Amino acid sequence: MESTISWSSNKSQQKHRWIIIGTLIGSIIFCYIYLQCLLPCIIKNLFRRTTNNVSSLINDKSKNNKRHRLRVKTRIDHHDKRNNINKKKNTILKTEIEQI
Image: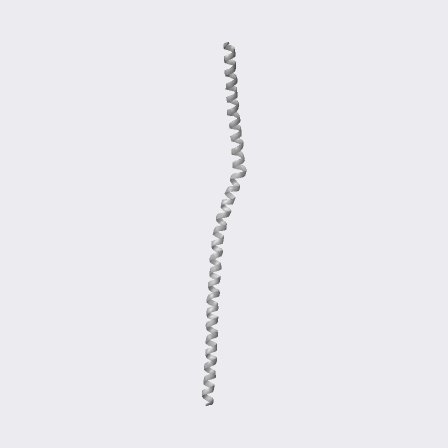
């Protein structure tokens, strides 16, 4: 009877050992895959998102600057055209006055 009890306890201990060893091997394989494959991909994607956000902000600023320059330029052009029209009117008026 004692040999049967000790044999069954050894068998259950062996099961526990194999469960622990299997869990350790599985966790080591998971950590290896995570560190080699998944973690770099996650870091690249995070880095790519932040650089995209920064570059889009920079592009937006440059686009806004271009828009502002265009607005100023069109204002200046418009102002120049009005001045030219006024000058022409003035010269026409002057010539009409001189003719009279």
